[in-house]
Length: 318
Image 1 (cartoon, one colour):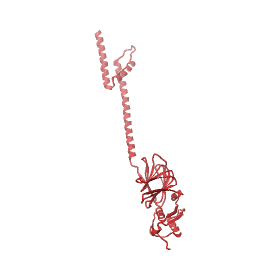
Image 2 (cartoon, one colour; image 1 turned 90 degrees about the vertical axis):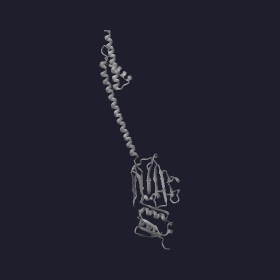
Image 3 (cartoon, rainbow, N blue to C red; image 1 turned 135 degrees about the horizontal axis):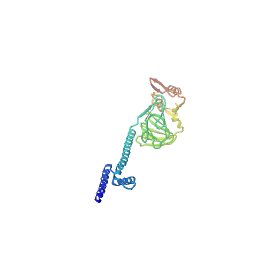
């Protein structure tokens, strides 16, 4: 009888060990994890007499382990899917950011035009001028390219400096109001500051000046020389915004360039002696080119004639 009881006990232990090994391999749990789960299961499966039944416990253990494994598998699956989605979104965002922004170009003829930039800044173009800028500012700088003349009102952004590029000069600002006169047929590039602060430099950065309000920077293209001076009436430099022409002791050659750029006409001074002839005149009523030339002619400054689209200026006979 005793031998039979021992044989049954040995068989039960062997069965328990065999089942533990089987479930350990099947569910891939460590001994410590499996022992902890068994202890909890033992406590929940005691009979009224307090005896543990391995036969009844292991099916329950398998059910709990399968449920636990299924939840872990589901969590891991969703986590992996979320990680892949996040990675794809990050790659796509980086790809879009690295793509060059489309360039917009606005040009004027015999009219002025106001352009609103992506950052909210405002630019007013003078006659026969053009401005190129990206559809969206993506880099750490806000860069535009100007050919002609424009008045800028720039939104403040210290982290993203605003840079106006011309053929020969760069004007860098943070937030300010200023005017740039950079027509290609003029010998000088002029930058006039109304408020704020701007740094003006040539392309090679070999010359540079920082302007204060009511100052103008003049860069001579031929000499590569950059100078600045204080203006008595800074508003005269932007009078073109109201359709006005203010010639304050200007050489005739400079006046004809300004009229050519404003009206898209070709004006030629036949007598070189007239090129440096200085004139003071103001036209504030939006006069057209014919009216302006007629007034200057009647004032005794010069004669002029028109051949097709070209206007020829000659000296008056003595």
